[in-house]
Length: 127
Image (cartoon, rainbow, N blue to C red; front, side, top):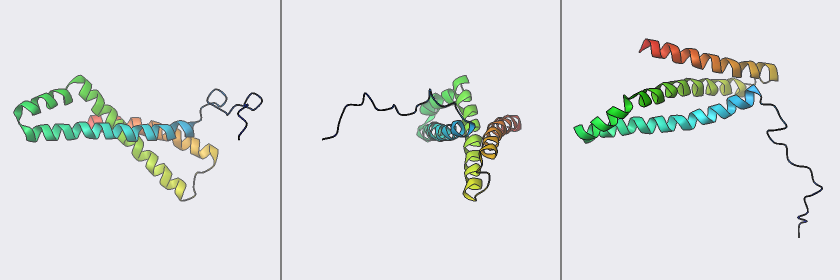
């Protein structure tokens, strides 16, 4: 049977030991934005289903989607969409064997954040 005495064994590394890195933060944010886009997509599907269901259901869904909270969700969804797209492009570059050293990959993570914000602003202005 395995020895369960863990008193003399070292602890596993955790977040209090390591400082956050741009690459790890951007990777986590790509995963979060992917899940957030699913929620936004469900909200849009709800809006379309409500439009097909009748005027009462559409009034409720449209009231939510066009409220300040719905506008906030849609704006953040545009930001998430751009960020997630840029993360996918970064992975395509990595898959080709480029920008794999630490300095270039951290610069790419920083550029993803800046470009996602700029593209979101341009998208909002254009609509």
